[in-house]
Length: 344
Ligand code: DAH
Image (cartoon, rainbow, N blue to C red; front, side, top):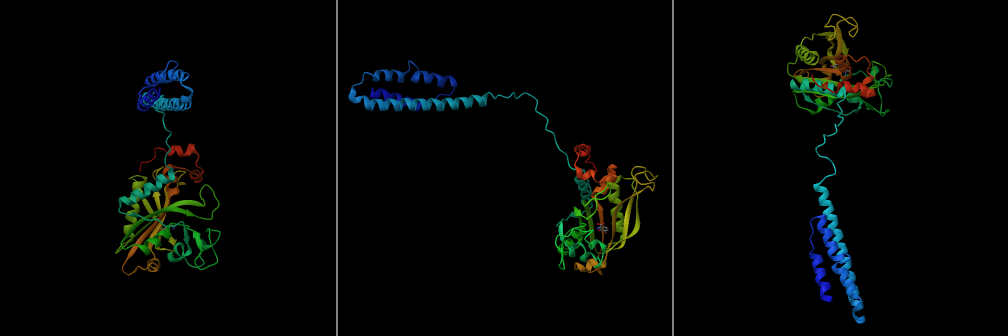
């Protein structure tokens, strides 16, 4: 009997079964009613009393080993069977994934940046929490300029010489670029800006701008005008005209506001352009010598132009959206209208 137990134990250890059917056959062979182990259990009754303890132990171990092995093979066979015959019908058509789309403000910001990149401009970025120096001081804002008041600017810290604030324009990145980059400089700076404004159809406390800066030897106002014209035609169509109106910014001299011909009425006058045929799109000018000097650039040797535009404003004009707040409320019905609007 001892040999028989050892023999079966060995067979069980070597047992290999691939299919569920083979596992079941092995179970019947060893553990079934007429199985080999069951038969040994019956023989055990006739074993001499002094051997009962030893053989009983061995038989029990054998039975446990057999059961464990069969369980293990059974599980492996089930897993293999599942892998071969998946429950899903692989020939079924897949479920359509509801794809999101980019936010219209991101689309327009990217279009603006892409246009200037084609003209050879790099992209520069700067911090949204800025200091007074980079937002105002270095940009030639006089000490009592109204933009420096609490009602226009969100201050993060006050009470010292160079307080921290949320940048009110991306022109601060001009300063950081002039401080850190070698000349010539040709960059656009897209980013979020913050102003302490009541929210309305035409104003928001958070919006986006793209600033541009070009500094080299002999840069003139004619270069500025040409860059803006090319941009306007890429953005609003090849027929677009521009006009420049004299304006004032502390950081540029001379300064101008740029209008484009209304892309709805083609300049004839409609309610979008309020009958004028023109739409204002940006401010610009020749970088003030004081601004160049503040960042260590010699205004006798170098000159440059800068411009800045609101991304939401360009988007509103491009798509005739009449309320700025739509861009911040994220109503899906509004956003989905731009799902395919990626062309320039
Ligand atoms: N920083 C101005 C603003 O926020 C926009 C601007 C105007 C930027 C003229 C410029 C510029 O670089 O030359 O309203």
